[in-house]
Length: 433
Image 1: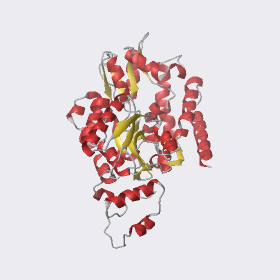
Image 2: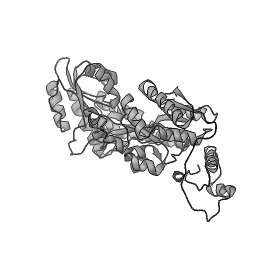
Image 3: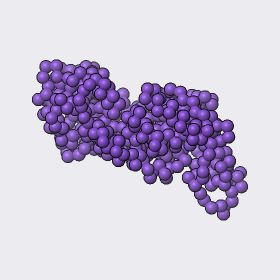
Image 4: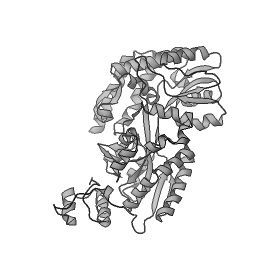
């Protein structure tokens, strides 16, 4: 794909170059020759140009539903008022958007700008379906490193980060007087609070997403080279084994007689909403439901592990991406930039509760005055981006099977994790053929 930092002399050349990139256009040198840019031209990046919407531009924006849709519609109104470009908003789940892009993009039927979780977008980027972020230096300066890493692919920034999330420790303040500082203390307190229909601590015992923080805190990892090397899998190393043992073995003792199938997300959130669960590990998406249930609760970072390290929870970054087949790449890129500016991300926080990954907003009084937001932000400093390479979807199933074996059948931890990694490696080889 043609880099967006190519030499250009005018906005019209910039637009035509991007259109070539969207269609898999000529190599950099060929574009230079075609545009008549000589060797003596002073180099400038796209960030040096004032990008303006194309004449007659009209845009389609895909957004999640509920509060995200409400915010997206507000963004469409603000963008049209600012730039005079009408924006139609369509509800498309951010988990489904990359697949819709793959089928609808080449046909000219996909959104110009769409929301996606960072772990779902890697395949679309590798297939050339997404334009790079036009302002990488600005975003790298103003946004959290985790968000930039998450929305980048092979060293290039593609996304416009709009929200960062990780999971942390919820606790019912009517049941818990102080937050535990260590995992050992958490299990001790949970044991004292477990009686009859009241549970001290519960989490899904086969869900890698929530369990990963404990594996990672001991030195386990999904893929090497910061999540980019599928030839190096660290989900069965000594750290992964230690982390699995530290969380699953005492958790099973705390909830005897319960199978993996008995402890679902809905079960534990229902218990917390009913005031029957003291501690819960969950993400910011659960806040509104717990508030609506009338539960008095707070959020704190996860307790320290037995090795003195913090659990390295998965962080997920929601971002907006520009369709490489967009008829209006300049206007689309401006929309993505506009909805992730400081004012509009603050609006997103106020409407949806999404934590903004902009440095300027993490210290905003509206966020710092909210202890729940502060708890998530503190845990986010220990979080690592979920890998977004195309091999990541192959990991979830085998790891769920391994944790299920450990919990339901008391299979040796090392044996179960080895089997999972072998399955993942086989699936990767088959995918690469």
